[in-house]
Length: 293
Ligand SMILES: Cc1cc2nc3c(=O)[nH]c(=O)nc-3n(C[C@H](O)[C@H](O)[C@H](O)COP(=O)(O)OP(=O)(O)OC[C@H]3O[C@@H](n4cnc5c(N)ncnc54)[C@H](O)[C@@H]3O)c2cc1C
Ligand code: FES
Image (cartoon, rainbow, N blue to C red; front, side):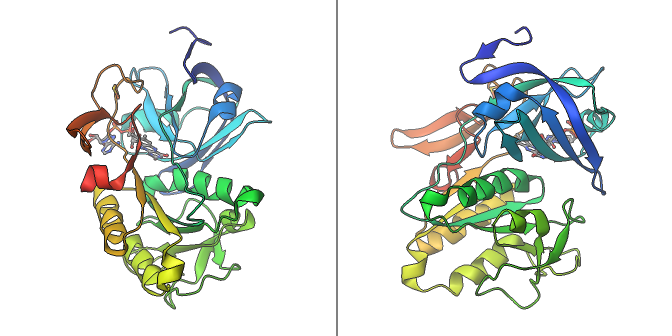
């Protein structure tokens, strides 16, 4: 595909690096000028990014934010291996090949405005995008709550929470500042002793909050989760316990990223029986019951 070619609503475009900040512990915030991607992005969709010379395979990264009018997208990533390590060297003004937005994102349910968003590690960015999108939808009566878990220092600033959330454990005192400033109450969990965090898994924090709700309050909750497989399984199990709808975003390893190689296929349960689906284009967001039963 040549630069500028498009595949449905997935665009291949040259994306100029605007900002590329180290946020500690191998984490980076990357802002790109990618107007076609920014205009079509939805929470849960991702880009497949060329990381630099000598790295033939693109790497998939979720959209953290997309500003359609300004033509900008933001990504937040943590280096795992040589591909993202190469990406860290890209400086403002350089141009990267960006394929996106890819995938089926979250489908929030208006009849369940209390959106419980559970994010773990590198799974937090798409939930920030979802939370901020819901908070900005003034007509929707949404009440998003973001619960985030990390075992490394937060890549975004935290502060003592300014937005109240009933039913939080005493130790969960801090929140991500920028997310609160966009109107989203949020609380943090970590087993690494990070200040102001609930000292347990983020799904335990979610369980604590859900247990404190009345049945009527729970009846308007839906869960959206992204993070490591064990975290997603725990979120799906919480949803089953309280009979709540739950969407999970899977972060499988990917090759082509556009549905052509089946390298990302996972087994999901459909009405017609088990079916192999491609995380890149059939997901990455799936109904939790189809993945975890
Ligand atoms: C849809 C999607 C969205 C994602 N969004 C983000 C995001 O917003 N921020 C972020 O930091 N990361 C995200 N990831 C994960 C990210 O793509 C991988 O961590 C990255 O590709 C690893 O590249 P690398 O060059 O650092 O490591 P590599 O050198 O490619 O791999 C190093 C090691 O990590 C393992 N590995 C690579 N990718 C994965 C994976 N997806 N899951 C488990 N193990 C893996 C490899 O087997 C290898 O052992 C996302 C993944 C997917 C599929
Ligand atoms: S990565 Fe090739 S089909 Fe999904």
